[in-house]
Amino acid sequence: KQEVTQIPAALSVPEGENLVLNCSFTDSAIYNLQWFRQDPGKGLTSLLLIQSSQREQTSGRLNASLDKSSGRSTLYIAASQPGDSATYLCAVRTGRGGKLIFGQGTELSVKP
Amino acid sequence: DGGITQSPKYLFRKEGQNVTLSCEQNLNHDAMYWYRQDPGQGLRLIYYSQIVNDFQKGDIAEGYSVSREKKESFPLTVTSAQKNPTAFYLCASQQADGYTFGSGTRLTVV
Image (cartoon, rainbow over all chains, first blue to last red):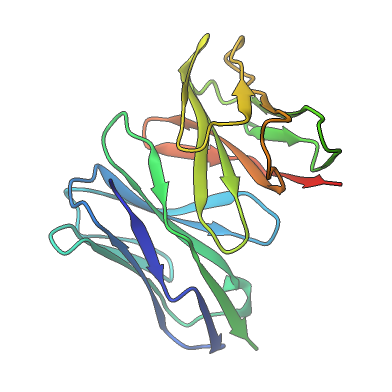
C-alpha cells in the first residue's frame, strides 16, 4: 500500500531564506507527483506537477524534484516571503486512473 | 469563471442527525472526489465518481453516502453512523492531470 510522508511537519524561517520541503513515498511505481498549497481554512491550489518520466519542474521561485528510485521528492522555495506561509502538501498518483494519495503536509511560517 | 463551489462553509450537526454537503462544478470535469481532512493530517479519500450515476468507496467511506445524478453535482451525506464527523471536508474535480479543489466545508458536531 502506497504511503506518503512529509518531513518536517512544521517549519519556521526568517524572510529571505531558501528552504527545502521533503516528501517520501513507499512505492516507486507512481504515475505522477503533485505539490499543493493550502492556506488556513481553504482548499488546495496546485503548485507543480511532475510526471513519472520527469526529474524536476520549476515555476517562479519554486522548484520540485523527483527521484522515483529512492521514493523522494523535494520542493525548493527560493528567497522565501511572508506570503509563502501556508501548508504544503505532496500527493502521488498511482496510475492513470488512480487516485491521489496525500502526505500529512508541512506547515510553513515565514517571519518578516 | 469556471470553478468548484462547496456549501455551506460551516455546518453544525446534532448527534444522530444526517447532514448533506453540497459540491457543484462548472468545469465539465468527469471525475469528482470527496476528501476528509483532520488537524495535522493529509487528505483521506471518502468517495469518488468517475462518471455520472457511478461512484466508488474510498479509504474511509463508512458512515458516508454520495450520489452522482448530474455531472455537475456530487453531494456528500454524513449519516448518523459516522461517529466522529467533526472535520474539514474538501471536494475536488479532475480532468486528465488537473485537479481543482473547492474551498471546503467545516463540519462540527454540537
